[in-house]
Image (cartoon, rainbow, N blue to C red; front, top):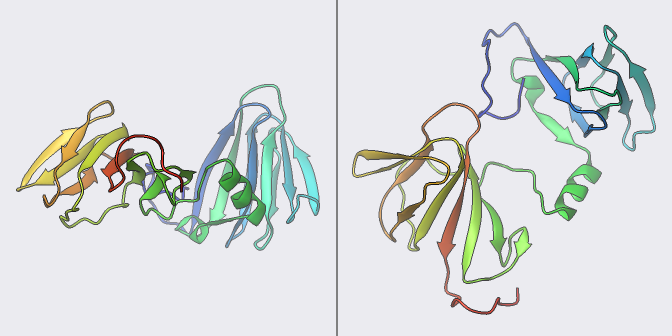
Length: 223
């Protein structure tokens, strides 16, 4: 069970529901969210506090190992490991597509944005830019990219690109040749060169891309 297409699914049968696992260290809380299908929790290890409602005030329950309960659709829910050791819960969620996705409570999105985070729509996310998460114009822009952030077909920019993998192996294809580069490697793409960029592996992958802009290097420009 996962929203992310980068997540490796070990058993790909489609019986009409998903089974996943959530594991968290002590005092770690999973923020309020909602699913389009019913969700069942089974405590495998530890002691867990479950809560629900728009503001966590509609109800709560503490469950121990072996306990199981269901949260219907249309209700925000969250949970926290309140034990003293690493905890684990099994999750059953209706539907073959992880319940059609997840919706975060509005205050969760607001709190994330206040900490410089954003919910990804898999488009390139501007991290450092005049209109980025970090408002700065240091003479270049920095984007965060995931699997699917760029089109599959070769394309080109009229700017210099610097690619810096953060996680996973990536393939840069140009002129029918593929060059694989890894975290710690750096690739430069000259302006106007048609190329495509795709992960060369399954699992989680991401990288940063720096692009030069018209601002001159020097003192940071005001946004």
